[in-house]
Length: 149
Image 1 (tube, rainbow, N blue to C red):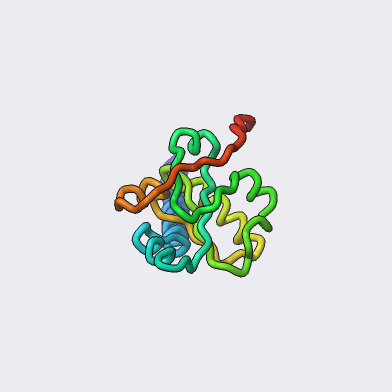
Image 2 (tube, rainbow, N blue to C red):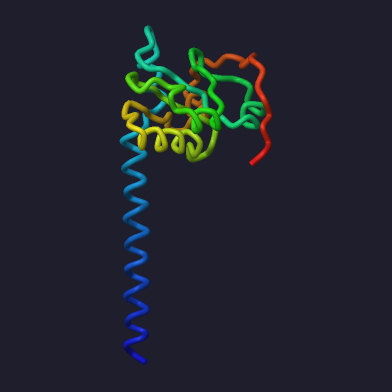
């Protein structure tokens, strides 16, 4: 009976260690593949040295109809289905309004599996940009409110 309890404790410790290691890898991966708002501003001004993509979900775009000047809007579903919408040979930064940059990270991770290695995520997304007092402009183009899963 004691060996069962010890085995259970050891297994629980192993699971905990694996989860913690994965979390730490994700944090390191995010830090290495992201830029903060101040760095992005420096990359965009006075002459843009990176491409900037707004990959917010349609409902997020509806809720926050502003974007960073110079950004190009690409619907997340489209870029996931066709990564060639972004050039593989240029530096690019992606942003969204997800709290943990979920949409941006998903796109960058997917593109990296296809050989795109010059992509970054804006840490904190549009909210971090606005929190610094940097300019935004109204998004005026039409878009589809795709609510299908």
